[in-house]
Amino acid sequence: MAARSKPPVTGDRAATRARLLAAARRQFSRAGYGQVGVREIAGEAGVNAALINRYFGSKMGLFAEVVGDSFTIGDLLVGDRGTLGDRLARYLVRPRRSGFDPTLVLLHSAPHAEAGGVLRAALAEQVASPLAEWLGGPDARERAGLVVAVLFGFTLTRDVIGTSTLGGDEAVVREHLGDVLQRLIDGA
Image (tube, rainbow, N blue to C red; front, side, top):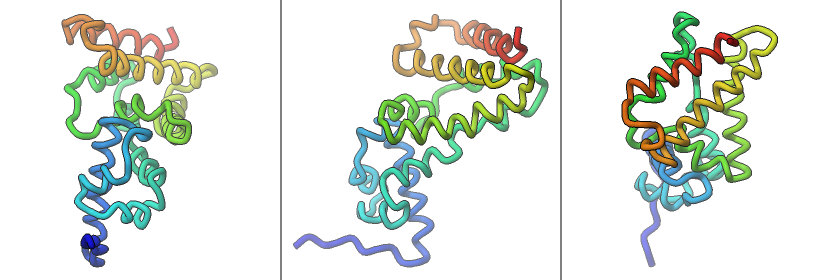
């Protein structure tokens, strides 16, 4: 009979929960909600898969917590309105993160019906709505939506289709991307 994993003692709960979240972030970035199982996440975290239900209620509960505040745009909205396009472009054209990348979670998980709903809600709440409010004006929602579309379209092109489609000069790509975003921001 195989030995069963013992539930962590009270002092280890926070550490176990943090390990599960970190493993889930990496796994969902790698393959997406529909392609990752709770055993893979728990295995990477070094715990029994039953702990996912204990701490998060379900795999979807864990996913919702991973997505949580992954798409926040707030820090990028601090600064001059006339340079937001450049700030967004610099953020996107930065070197890719190792381990967790919320844009990869979006790309891999959006096609899944339940996970896609969680992602759409997070994008609306954390990116589109704050950006529309910050932009102001009668067509702010539409402009904010188009900015989001450009951001994730760029990410899709870079991470799925391939950077060769974008050209080779990162500075030129960043400059043009910033210009496109700024036109949407300015309503020009």
